[in-house]
Length: 508
Image (tube, rainbow, N blue to C red; front, side):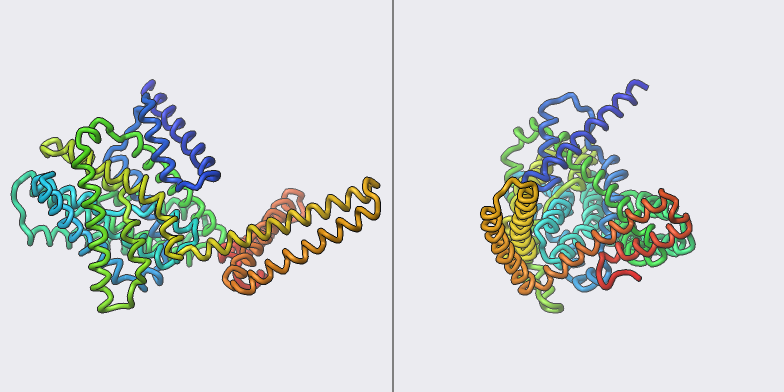
């Protein structure tokens, strides 16, 4: 019982750190996940924290809901538009990456071939969490986000299958290509079928239920049912539920569902990245510093070669990928919790296990602390943050306008209280009014030149108005003006409008 309370106290400590980091990143320009890793590193130096990242914790508890949540929000129409490059990166890309990384490590004398192949497989799965979060914050193109996130969702399964094949090679000394291909097809196709069937069944069941608590619980069970052995099943189940399931849900259920999954993903990401920082073995990193640096270089080189090679192949069949996208996809190929979990799952019989762990942590830390931090600068340099720049300019001008109007209101109050003589009041009021008109015209010019920005601002204003209406309904219900049945009906109308993002005409 004492051990249980100690564990509970440490979990509360981690949550407190998560809260502090979340508050801190609002003031500093640093990706949230990067800040969590840094916080974990600080806690590791401080000591006294017994929580650690284990394969079972990552692959059985944290990864399934993360994968499900990401797939749940991915639109099938966006995925289908770029399915060719996503599949190319997720299947042949992982195979080529494994071979390239292993070749570099063997030629450099860092590892023998079996261990090098194991490392190439476990480090080839990308983790887009930090990168996609940065994409959203700077207004990167939606297509770029779909490419990065779609690849990551599907390459996990490929990397895991290759990892287990290479692990068998290292332990048993034999490699049967036909058997490996059969295993890969069995796991991947079987996972796709199981996820599709279960996902569709749950989506149809949701259509028959009108209780958001039960509907949210059904999606939660679905996400955790397959664990990591069925990572592709979780991906497909998430895609099916995210694209078919909401059709059978009430507007209120949709809002609750998306909010719950956003919170679950927030917690899972928070624990993974902070425990990642806590779990770093600095002694091992120092002992294998040179091999780790070579591993970082091999992973970077392999990523660039794979992205540009496969982009050339895809160009033969489908529309081209813009050159700036290729550079971002290459530099944004972060590694994260899945790579660490696979490395931690290596059995003691693997002679090079300590070195493989050190190299894995080195690559993951480099991608998170260097690549993730610099990705926003790269996007800006390539001109892929135009939307964010426009919004920033609007906020700057809007801030000036609000400050001027506040000054006019203050001046009016002083005059009404007799604290200003008429001459001073009329003179300063005229100056402020002229500035107000000038700044107001700047906003109109900006919105006229940027119709997308105008639509975004109008949509945000409409959403705020809808939320204000919903709050008013709650107040009317508490005062006894509205009955329960009428309240539910009116809330459903507002929730539907809010779920649609405030687009189009206001609700009737």
